[in-house]
Image (cartoon, rainbow, N blue to C red; front, side, top):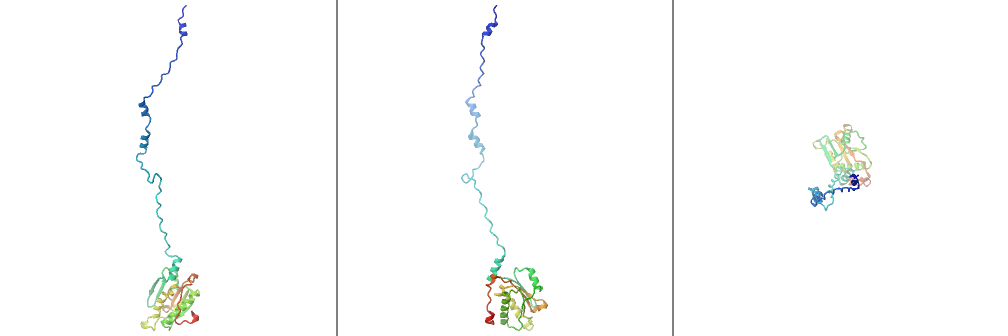
Length: 229
């Protein structure tokens, strides 16, 4: 009996080949690949080139402000003393006068005017001529300064016997204390309290002697003997 399926068994079925994807055209390849030059140009759009040959240049440092010197230190004060550039605040009347080196502590000056410092020496100048009084004052303050005394008392008198009742000696003393060479060693002076002579006497405060003040020179007085200089 003829079996029709026998022929089908003998047939070999060839597997179908997978269809190949279509090859992309050259135009599509060109569209899919980005243009590197265009991308770089777009990314760098608006960027300004760095000055200085492509290097990061740090800005110049601002100039330093000048160093401020202190208004007045010890060295400056000493220089003024040695050069004689010392200024005084002065006040004078018929009965009262005072003077102080500019910059002196006001508390110290108030204590001097209140008679709160011990008087360590005094000079009575009654009956002296101006020339004699100057020599005596120069020698007295010189010795007091080099002896380390700080507050002394001058007694020129009230000048009741002077013309118009004014003490010329008192006026001259103020001039002498604020001029060379005494202004180098005088810090302040003022009219004394009644118990020390009142308007006829003066407290004088001297500087503290220092080793570097040895250059203070005192002219020899006209009436000084050899052993006084």
